[in-house]
Length: 218
Image (cartoon, rainbow, N blue to C red; front, side, top):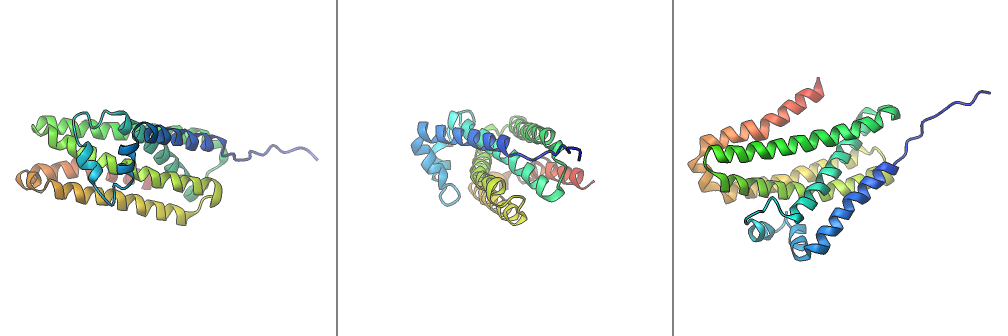
């Protein structure tokens, strides 16, 4: 009988990613405890937004730590969802995750750059900066849901579509709350610049997701 080489999937690199992202979470909590506690209740109380919507709101260490935490878990969640739905060969695993991570990072940075550029062009830097900060704060908060889903998908219920659907619903819900709160807080600005708001919404919020969805379904 000849020996047959079998590739056995391992979650070691996923474990390193999860613990690495947790390290950023622990650092953020240790260095900015009060801010962290306000951030945790963000979907239920927007006190965090009013307290920290100040100068350098996008370029502070707490926001940076949580953004790295979110991108890492978002990338892993997309990867685990891809694996659950498409059941690929194990040999393709090492190549897909860096592509997902790089793609999400590039997408996020490009989107933020275009949004801030839009604010500069239309002379509404402060408002657009506020919008970006608020939306990114809610997206970062949904990274906690992604972390919990990743832990379950890696160690408890591997490739569970129910977990993926539930986590996706919660992620959309958290960011939906953020959108409603943001629009509500800027009603006057939106009413006075309704055309530009619709242009912004179509070009920078809806169009990217339509393009991605079209690419995935091809």
